[in-house]
Image 1 (cartoon, rainbow, N blue to C red):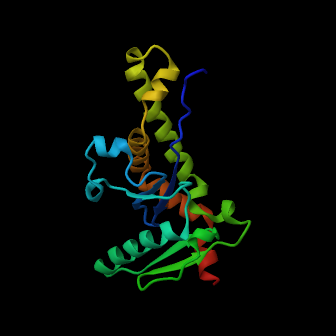
Image 2: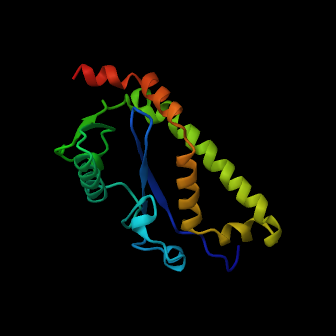
Length: 191
């Protein structure tokens, strides 16, 4: 399309949850240190309910993962709670365990079979997020002449809001069932 500008904003999201069914606020990774949409909305990161990180490709890296992990460790230390964190073997996750967070890496080529998030948690999130997007599109369709115009109006803030709401709607029973279904507990016990 002549004169149109391709959307360049990309984000990655890391979800974390506990076997007891607790949703931990997501880590959202973008390209910008502070996207314009966040500034315009005067978003307070401390109260936002998610962690924002950035790098040029919006990818999970060791530099992004390490501060998030240290923050989780501090939270667990304040609660006097020790946890075990299951991770795939992505290079960005290759960091040492901390005082209150022990890391267990899932075996290569087994992740999709034993990763609790892959047993239905992400699918449940995607269903909630898709419904939220569809509802927003329906509510706003008369404000735009066509779908292209509507899509141009969307910002990274819209995406983050849908992520947050969709993640909060994944219920604890689904999370607990997916942990059981994964067999991850047996893998950890055998280590």
